Image (cartoon, rainbow, N blue to C red; front, top):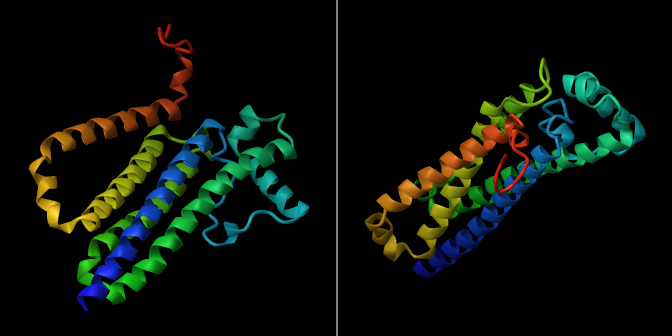
Length: 228
């Protein structure tokens, strides 16, 4: 019984590492989506419908026509053609696809580990899964802010979306450390204060970065390192 439990913990440990890589990847893709102004290319929620990309000319034209109705196209990208639209579409579609992949890749193994270890031993992982689902809602909440009366998403909602992603990433990392060596948990608490302060500063910088990105404030001073 003990050997089986250790084997299960080993599988859980490697699964968490894979999830850490997935979440890190979606943060990178999300940043590139923002930098390429691709986030508003898909104007509908599409929880299940958008799992596959457009497979016909009519589907491409439908997505493009929906995009033409929002301010970003009317005020900023009026000269964009279908080929140009496809470039920004693929970034946003890839971002959403990774989000769906993360949700499924987390839920299905989590059910398996629940049967193996019991709900009490994996309840923290269920909290992470709830955050992942909530993150999908925040993402759409962010996109909605850019569909009416503005050409960009709200920088407040963008920062919430980004910080939530890093919270999820941090919680997964914490679980990885717990399963890596459960006998040394006390060592993490002995040196807790300094890492906590550092983590707070990092998160604060991430929030400021999201504000700058969401407001295009980085273009104010476009020389480095003197910054104007």
